[in-house]
Length: 503
Image (tube, rainbow, N blue to C red; front, side, top):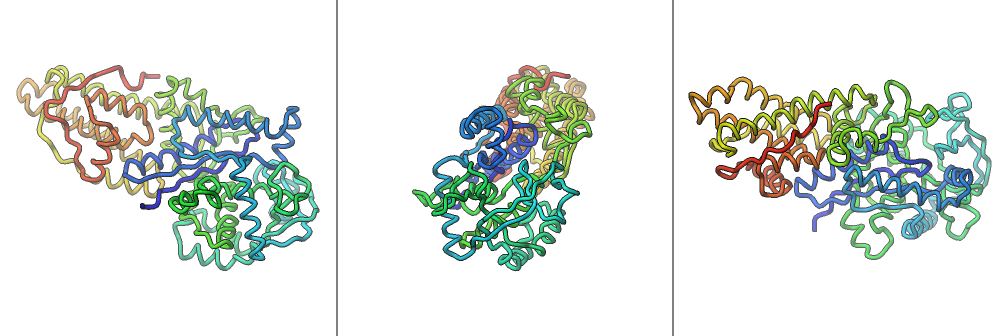
């Protein structure tokens, strides 16, 4: 059996309900998972929630509930959003699950057996909201360099992981595996950080809401050390049957936000190296979203609720697909971006309603008028350059570039109808008019297949209106493998409502 293609999101911290940032990462991972399945791969797609740490205990205490009850409530909010976004994950891991706790404790014990963990005293600056230690040189005054909140000085007994031991090995790994750190413009940050590496505190005595350290339960495992292990606990490492882990690991890509790149690109591979476990193939750190040019924060009241966007654009189905399309079309994946209603409406009207939706509608109208609803014309060969560029963009996780190739297919289809005017040529050369409409519909069929990972609902509606009987995914797999994308002779279209009602 070939190894499954393994994709992960970070596990999301349950300090509050999910927002557009959580949706962004998960949509990207889902689009890649759907694309790989369309290419014929077996895929395992893992997501989940990070539920330990001081911040969760404090939030639960403020609400007068137990940490577990608090986490349970927030987890359901994440699951509801993933359902609304049509996320096709295969696994969902919670760090409070027994299977995860068992794996963390076994992992910790093996590190200790390998003499890569030792006990000592720790003193440094700590940011509770970020659950992160910072050295004096990394601070901005007395505030966290990520969230700008005040840090506190902590001194306590701690277990340490010999991270410094893996400095040279990590640098060698990066050099020999240039695709591991992605996008590449972020790699220098990691390499410079590793050059100054020091050992890592991996336990706390003052945080009770966490995984107990084996044989020393006055300590709990540092929340980040605990969380990173989800990527193997969620696929059966150290559990039965172990075959699941062997068929899936190593991860092909970890999707993360840029603020947690160091944890995944430095600490996590060092932990795996210590135990002789293969290192993931790629860690991809995407950027942050601002809102209308301003930093997104709960205190400013400008958090973007994905549920509201979905509702504003037609509810689950159309609204879901519009959101999925926009977040990966608007900003090069890996860069920071700004979310605005103007930009969202602009993309919707220009590229979806006026270009894609209008092209399908006008083509089907002309087929019904000129050819009694039948797709006539001879089989033609599609130019392969758009498809090859789309594939290359998807391989590079350049989702905006992939969508640009689809946009070009649609623009070329509109230009072809405008220039060849089948509503005119039908009067003098009906065969030519039919061929024009056939060729444009072939382009729309290609567009539907390539858009399917991004917009799974609306592409099914396109498929239905074009009169397709075979499953879209089945046709798509054959097209990607052989290039075959023909219509059944005299296939009848089934024109429906416009795909994208104008806003």
